[in-house]
Image (cartoon, rainbow over all chains, first blue to last red; front, side, top):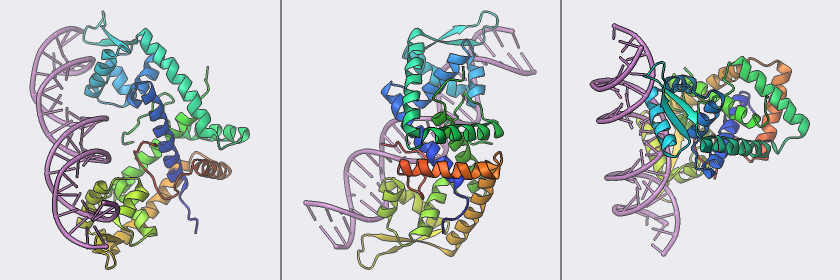
Length: 152
Length: 152
DNA sequence: TATTGTTATACTCTATAACTATA
DNA sequence: TATAGTTATAGAGTATAACAATA
């Protein structure tokens, strides 16, 4: 009666649970999950263009415009025209943006602990290894969480 | 440099990946992920009311109305007024709905195999056990995939 | 001509609130 | 008075398409 084929379902269900909890935490910093994704990426690739960001996020350029509009308004990122190609905007984190990123990383650790709480230390290590292997097998970008998109 | 606190992120990323792939499969049956959730639940609890379905899904009653409207139009479910309480609608799968549910289960198995492909048989069993423990620890409903909702 | 970013617009999904009918 | 279901409406989030500036 337990039935086969429940593992992917469970994975997806737990992933959704974890994402929802994390979204809640980000909101406590005044951020949306999308904001958090941009902060993470800009922390790793400062100076990236909007087009580059769109490609990394798997988003459409117009989506990046409204996203960056909002984050710029809130003082998290700055746009500066590239001197070598004046069509492109170079995106960088402000000090406030870097501060938000640090806070975010702190929350991510608490979040991790909360999500993994039901497991023993040994089980956590097993899980880490298994998820890493799955991620690599499916060629998922370690820095990007699509958050919604179809996988096509 | 690898940094801590990436497990929940990975879980969420992989869950999203799995959900997106499955959504793609359901579309090949002409179903949305929401449809799939209703089919699963109605398969297990035939005759449930719209209110009961809303509670199980964690959705609002008006959401169930449009969902069932659409599925009824497509011949997947029927509404029948309860004879004991004529306010409530009893929801049941049509033959076509049951057929769709069977197809869905077949797809779920293929999906499972594809998602778990990077792992050995032993690793898969480990993963199943770990995810089950996590699910139980967080009291997730084994039949319901919220798909979006905040976890509050 | 092609590309970056922008704007205007529309679509999808979901929720809130007001309403009807039964209880 | 309370509950099941419905309708009408609005909001958030995202995409598509037309456009301006620059290459």
